[in-house]
Image 1: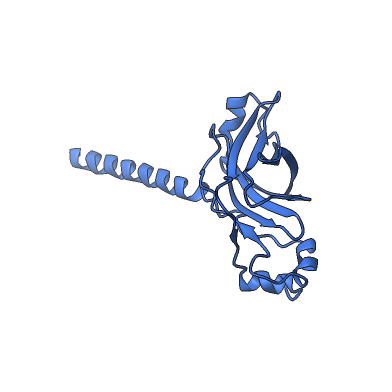
Image 2: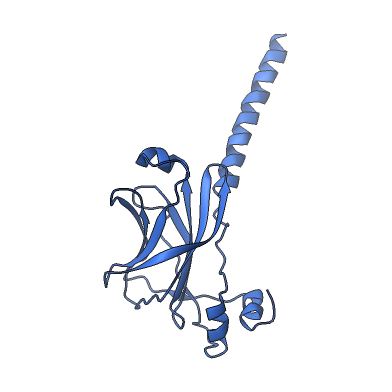
Length: 191
């Protein structure tokens, strides 16, 4: 009987540990919305400016905002059409930390800290996965120079914000290598 209880306790322990590990891997997955989303403006401009630097990206070195309220990733910038897009993720616990009603939609904006210009970001797609909330955000009319510091700002309440640096002034944006599917869509050949 003691042996059975011991084995049963180990099975429960390993099951709980395995479930916790799987939960951490599955729900914290930042692949949601991390790919480039092609827009009509990009399709129109692509034929005029087919070059390696059509889309810019940057490896976001800060994994999470300064205060831990959200995470930004999958940043793309198309200088020829003044278009920027990125994805954000936040945990439901943000509502408790900020005394905001559960499910409140947050506003986001891009801030060019070098020039002080802000660009409101529009949510174009949303996905909620257990405790995480994912949003694909886009802005048009965006202008960034090669030495500009770019920050995404999450507006919380009463003028309180959370910030994450997307691109540091000394960190150059890289040319994004378009996938074969991206090129087909941009050329008007697919969806």
